[in-house]
Image (cartoon, rainbow, N blue to C red; front, side):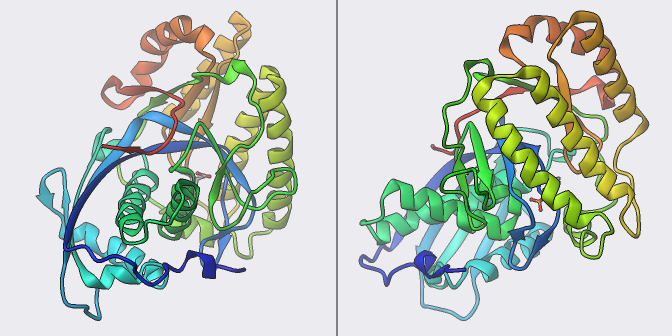
Length: 359
Ligand code: PMV
């Protein structure tokens, strides 16, 4: 795969000091990515809604210094120096150093904060790594002023992907596809692209309430989970099915068939967890309250002829998805019937968003 287009051209300008701040969103996959090969190449294409309220805000201060062999950075999270988060970021810098050689010429002071509580069980790697990638691209666009905004976004997504696969879908919005797919023009395994077709208006301002069922550390990290897809007995069928589902999802997003949307989104969520249940070693990330919530959603949908549905990430929290037209009724239902299954009754009301913002 040709990645040479992502190697920064030799620097045209020099800059002594610069500070950039970016707000980048979290995202929720409708067709899931689970299984990859090196370096962060997905085994199937995926598509996600970009979120609006769940985001990371990161500032990087770059100070020019003598070129060194190692990347020099300090990391602060919510105002506190965080040594324990550094290895993951150092690893990210190692993976991107060929594409951003200028990182050896700057000391970087990184300050990051999330809009959602750190221990909420909401994965912060997508928003966290896309924010760093977007700040790096701000520096690169000063060093290389010829870069177009399209090239900047593409490379930001390419870099974010090397940190965490799903982070590649956290640069743009409201719908991003990552992974090469014959029916999605411009799609690539290397970076996320905006869903390129006209989306039915029923998906405008689609709602996502994130029910915080379990805020603890996951027992199995997504890195371990992805790896368990190697030699998984159902892996090849799953990758094929996911690509077929993405084709179906593309049609649904264009024709606005909500019944088909509900069906496909829930099937994807349960299939993701079925892959976990059938891995060796097997594991379960859902909790009893995850299942309580799913059953209540099914009951509500039946009784009210609603288009509410759920999806799951690699964790116990439940994302409740519904059209804006049902917002009032569903919010009432969540507050009165579902909140009690959440830790400390906590949930976050979110909706689709439009991607990274410079602050
Ligand atoms: O980006 P990672 O490596 O944390 O993987 C995320 C995988 C899922 O969230 C479970 C699915 C997806 O497509 O976002």
